[in-house]
Image 1 (tube, helix red, strand yellow):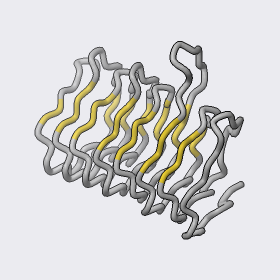
Image 2 (cartoon, one colour; image 1 turned 45 degrees about the horizontal axis):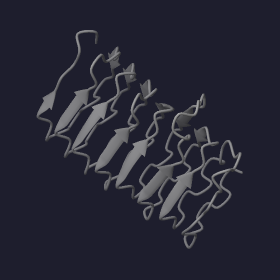
Image 3 (cartoon, helix red, strand yellow; image 1 turned 180 degrees about the horizontal axis):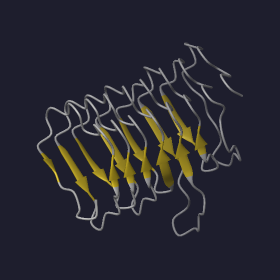
Image 4 (cartoon, rainbow, N blue to C red; image 1 turned 135 degrees about the horizontal axis):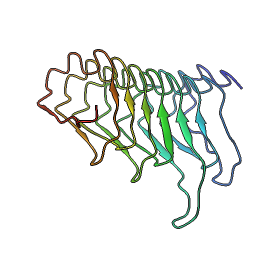
Length: 193
């Protein structure tokens, strides 16, 4: 349920079996805990609001993927504030991720690498989703992304390069999306934007 383990600072490890049918973990369930890593079972479709907010020791998140060649029709949404101010160093969102919510990774100062699975289904990156990720140097936006919302990458002071996948479907870049990205050297935007 919501806030189930909130503030359990000594909680370092949670194991959910790969065969689990867990669909969603309650909002803020692990917020402000001592978790260091977490693996999502394939059954999880929603990473709830604030799930790992302020988990400073959380450096690694992994996702169980469908077996190669197996049909998979599921989707994953990363809710608002899900990893805000966590200690993540890198994250590879699976191809079936469709949305990254408001401030989902905001303030993840150690986050150096963000990548997306091949043939990503991601279409929406929310307001301030990656704002203040001071260690992030480069990002490649999947071609499926239609909208990058306001202040999405604001104050990513190390961000040098932003690239868009060939055949980008991008239609909208919000206000101040790259404001104060002081190291930004290059960005290529398709004609369709």
